[in-house]
Length: 424
Image (cartoon, rainbow, N blue to C red):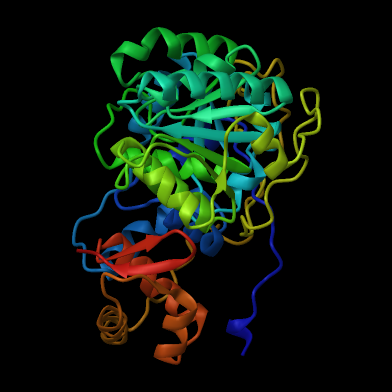
């Protein structure tokens, strides 16, 4: 029964020095290691360094004959590129990281930030909608964003054409955050480059992707989940029945956020998604007063200090670190201070004494059998991990390594809310 016991959450130590960031980025950028797998590896092995050491063995057990984690050279280049762009990395263990976003199962372990990170500590509200917006929709978005920013909200959007652009422009004086689908230094669409630069000076640019990455189709849903996770609520203006904005609204609903929509004419296809949301229970929005009635007046948090503790969900016996003989890292752009050095433990979970023999691995035959049983119970429709544990009559401790192996092998996919599905 001891293997079923869950240890008390131990907050991660945020990276402070160059070597800390290199290990963090190497693990995150390694092949088939996404946000959920990253957190699972840290929880099970205690530190990025320890997880990197066992990652090739885990991949071999999953059937990958050749597996190499992300190289130190690649990680170092990402750090340099981010700094050249005037950005700084914020880890999920950093007090600046938004608590609401950290609660997501697939929260990004690292965000590149350019501008004023303190905006993340103020009340956040998303405003999204159609790229091919009407003139009335553009006017509505800009006016609504300006009034909500004046009321104390920071307006969050995706820097796309149409509604997103209008929302950023309306809220620029009061506070706006742009979530980017590509790297922090890649503006998409290119026509919004000037607006993006302005937000980088007066607001905040955020991206979970490495600098220099040009976005492709799959990056936009990933960006949208961050918009949904960051905010207390989301307002949709002019969204078609099948659109990215509507997907973002559904994600927000799954996370328990307040979903609001501006109604439109039934003959206008751009209003179909908004009208559907209202039909299904979303709050109808005519003006900023309706939004404030749904969410309440935000407290004035412009000068509020950042949260003092990392999110409790981020667990794992992480060792604190210092730079062994290296130079302490200088302050990242925008911090105004050099982070204090912290001690580094050379023992404990995730570390091994020099010359010690590695632990014996699991029985390959049993592993293959468990993998087969898991895949036989998963399909395209998501299934909760708890239900899978019950179906297999096993324990979370036994199932976790098998799920990790299947994730690395690309055979299963994790969905928001702790759900699993078989990869297509």
